[in-house]
Structures are given as structure tokens and as C-alpha cells.
Image 1 (cartoon, rainbow, N blue to C red):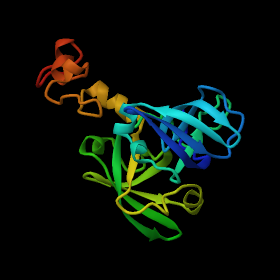
Image 2: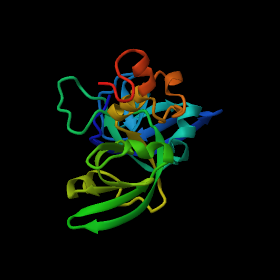
Image 3: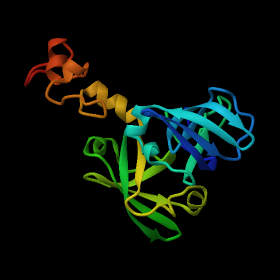
Length: 227
């Protein structure tokens, strides 16, 4: 479990492909690693397999490489890092699981006073989960949605966020890992709405969701004109 507050910027030291999987070695300022501990790398929860002074390694499965931006990493690349949340720590961002829902694209970047406005394109399936003033994790960074329209949403990076993340230097067109708010996913699941797990809006009950007809049959809702 993470909060989306980036702690360090790491540098890829090596990417050892092992069939469809890979071992990723990352240099950073973290110390006192625990074997198996979770570290979010660009928002992806990975487990430490090896470590040394100023570096750690983690394995990424074929599924992770295919469904996140980690498959495109190369030595010298820089990544956002966050260690798992301690139970006695402040929840500075929002609840982030480290499980990526999809990959978006950085479309535009423009000054907004002292802030920096980012516009990101998302896969259509994720668009319903983005709402103004709601939370979203972008490459592991907890951010607030400033505006949402169609398959695009806007963010405003304040100066401190600009200095602690890599968004200022990312070229337009860069793919970004996205994790939508887990609360929104649970609401969609309960309502049987289409979402990241491919629920069908035409058959919500098959996905364990709710429908007005289902509530009527169970006695929780009256028919038309009934109170």
C-alpha cells in the first residue's frame, strides 16, 4: 500500500530479460532494504529480490511488462520511487495499491501561474473513473484531477511537485502508468457498470452488480407509480 508521495528518483542500472520476464536493477538513495519489501516503481508495486549499497533489484513478470510502461525501460532511464506505507505514517496523498489500471499518454504541458498544467489521454475504459477534484495516481504520483472531458483530463503541478517528480522533463507522447481511485472502482463494481475488469453494462447481475429490476424483485424498490 502506498500514498502516491514520491520519495526518490531512481535510475535504471540494468534490465536483465529472462524469457518474457525481467529483473530490473535500480540505483537510488534508499537504505536498509528488507528482502521482499514492496517498492512502487513508476507506480508499479514490485518486490525487492536483491539489494546493495545504493541499489535494489526487483522482478517484473510478463504481465507487468506488457500492461505497464516498465517494459519500455532502459539503462539510464529515471523513475519515480516510493516505499510502502508504514502504519504510523501520515497519508499524505491517497490510497494507492500499486496495481496499474491502464497506460495513458502525456498530450500537453503549459504554464498555469506558478503551476504546470498537464493534459493526459486515457483509455476509454478508464474515463468514467476520473472526476474533477478526484484523485488519480500518474506514474505513482498522487494528483488531483482539475478537469475531465471525454478521454482527457487535466492536472496542475504546483512547484514542489514539479521539483520532486519527472513530469517537467517527460517529452510529449510519453506513456504514463495510471491507477484510478480504488473507491471509484468498488462503486462501479457494486453498480455493475463497465470498468477496468470488463464488466458488461448489459448484464450487471452476471458481474455481481445491482440493477433496479434486481432491487424490485428483492422487495427493495416498488414498481412504477408505487411508493
